[in-house]
Length: 480
Image (cartoon, rainbow, N blue to C red; front, side):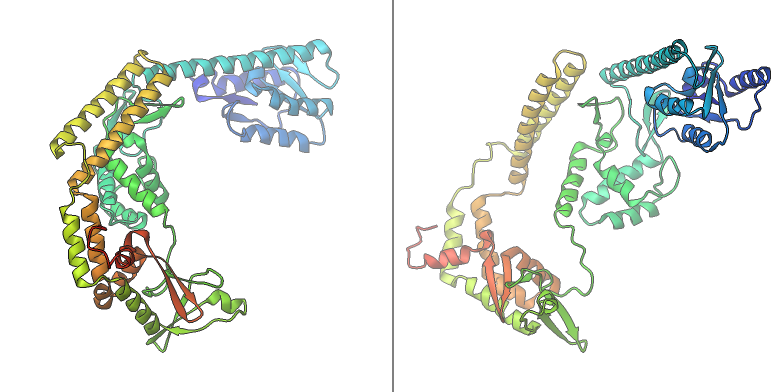
C-alpha cells in the first residue's frame, strides 16, 4: 500500500518511488502481490475511504494477509486507526510490514516491537500536530496583515496569492444584490433573472442554484468583511457591494423569513385572515359553480364538529359594517387632524440630512481606524469588541434618526395618517380589488374570528384610534 498527500508529493514522496521499493521488498521476502493500493488522501482528515477498503479486504480474506508499506506514517498517523489494525493482527488476519523501520508485526510480536510501533505512531501524530500549529501561525499572520485565508466566493479570483475581482462575474454579483434590494424579487425570480443575465459558478461554470444565491446574499465577504479565529477582520480585497446594500438585502431576507407560508390555490380575499373560534384553524374557502364562494372550517368538518357554510357576501357585509363603525364623524376627524398638525415633532438630534451623513461618515472612519489598531496589535480583542459595539450602536442610532428625518417621521403626523386611513377604510374596502382588500384587513385587524355565524374583530393597536377617539367624543378636544 502506498499513500501520498499533495503537500508530501512535492517533497519527494512519489507514488512511483514507494511502489518500486514495495515490489522489491515483496520479491526479496517471496510475498505474492494480490492487490496494490495507491492512495492519494490525508491520513488525518475525512473518513479515509481507501484505507477502509484495505481493512475490509483483510477482514474478508480467508488467509493471513501481509500489508506492506514504506513507513508507519504512510499507513496511519493516529492511534484510532492503529486500534483497528491491531485487532486484525491479534486475530492473525494481517502481518504488518514497515520497510524503513525494518519492522514486522504479527500476532506473536514481542513487546519491544509493539512499543516501536506505538512510538512511530506517536512521532507521526506529533508531526501532524506541529504541521497544524505551523499552518495556524501562518494563517494568523495573514489575518494580521489583511491576507486571505478563506476560499473566495463567486465574483473573486485568486491571482498571485491575492484576491482580485472577477471581471465577468463581479458586476453580475452586484446586479444580483441590487435586484434583490428593490424588494420586487423572490429568490426564485432572482434565480431566473440572474441566470438569464449569465451568472455562473466559478467552480463548475454552471448556473447558480437557488441555495447558492441565498448564500451569496448572506456572505459578508462581498462588502469586505471576513471572520477567522472567532474574530472579524477586513481582508485586502475590493468589496463588490457596499455594507448598506448588503444590509438592505438582509432586512428583506429577515422580513420574508418571518412570513414563510406558501399560499397555493385561488387568491380568495379573506384567505388566512379569518380563524375559527372553536379550534383556532384558518377558515377555508371553496368556490361553487365558478361563481359562489363559501367560507367554512375544514378542521371542524374533519373532526365532525358543528360548522357552517357562509357566503363570501355575508363576510363582506360584516367587514364593511365594522370599518364603518370605526370611522369618526367628520367634525371630530377634522378637529383631530388639525390638533395633531399643531403639535411639534420629536427631536431628531437637531441635524440636517447632510449633517447626519457627515456624522455617519465620521463613525465609519472611526470603525476603520479601530480595526487597523486591532490588527496592528495596539488593542486586545476584548477592548476591540467593546469599542466596536459602542460605535456600531451609535451608527445604528444615527442611521435610524437619519431615516426618520428623511421620511419626515413625526409621530403625531403618523397618527394623523392613521386616522385618515381609518376614516377612509370603508370606502377603500368597497372600491378595492381582492388584493387591496386583503392588505387593508391584514393591516387594520389583529385577528378576525368566525364564531358560529358571526365575525368577531380585534383591531390592531395602531388602528383602534377610532374607538379611542369615539370614547372621548364628549370632550372639548383637549384629549388629543
